[in-house]
Image 1 (cartoon, rainbow, N blue to C red):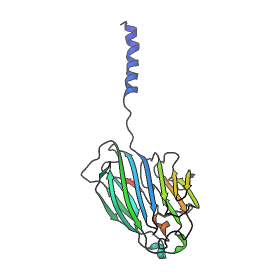
Image 2 (image 1 turned 30 degrees about the vertical axis):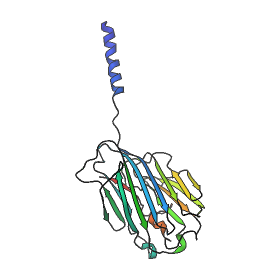
Image 3 (image 1 turned 90 degrees about the vertical axis):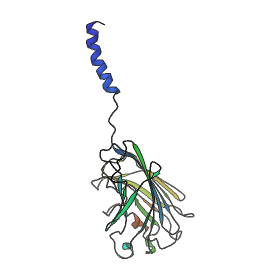
Image 4 (image 1 turned 45 degrees about the vertical axis):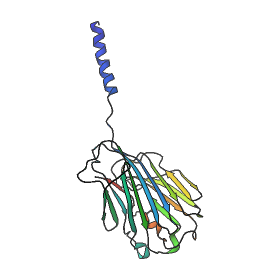
Length: 251
């Protein structure tokens, strides 16, 4: 091969090698999917499916998730919530976990301190049941829910939520939004209500510190009283700051 061709070919081969080299995978939450079933007694059955790309950088052993304990409120709204974690799996296999209770939240710590996670896409499924002692009947037809929480340090590519109300209920009002870490910027997201089912999704990736929240309302008298403060399972108001529920951390 003539020398001038060899000189031209070498840079071209180098560029091809760089282009062919695999890109460094980024650690991130690929999806956060929450399904909430509201029972006739106003208790909740929650299933959260969280897919995470693990690279061993920030995520080494598992995740930590905040669950509700005792909200800061007065009267009946301050009563302790009943919380039972039913099961946690990682890639379809039961994963060890423990609960650590604080003043306003219970931390669900998933994983073992002496086991490092392999670098790959990993899916956690968390199932838990939430109950509440009897409260005033004025709020039992409202469910505000902070789907993702805002305690995680990685972006979330996509967030989804489904709320199933009891039979014979009918959704009369619903909304969904994303609030960024500054607490001021709000973005409304599409939501769909059909019969007793509400669904919503984020329309773009959530940056660290942002959270995806929804609000569902249905007529009073359909479900049993005694869950009047269901809203306190996931305290949320669009205009005032409160403790948010569902935050995700890394460990």
